[in-house]
Image (cartoon, rainbow, N blue to C red; front, side, top):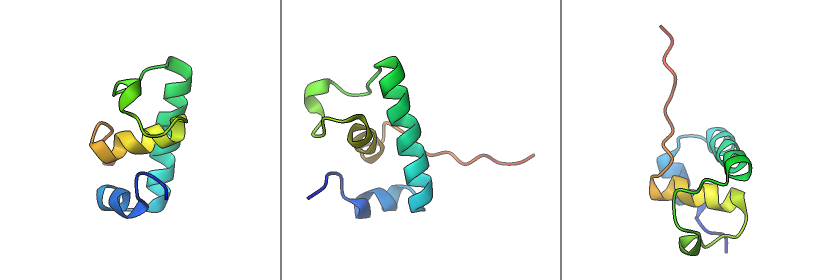
Length: 69
């Protein structure tokens, strides 16, 4: 079973496409900067993409929509 669950994540992010975009962007940041929001021992996943999804689920990464002015 995958962690975190897609059902839990879709309660936080309103579309699968947005979830993919945000998680991939965050995982690339992790690879480039080696900056993590949690301690390494707290993560369940070993790869950055799974860790990015964990951060979204825990609320460390917020999805903010751009408003056009």
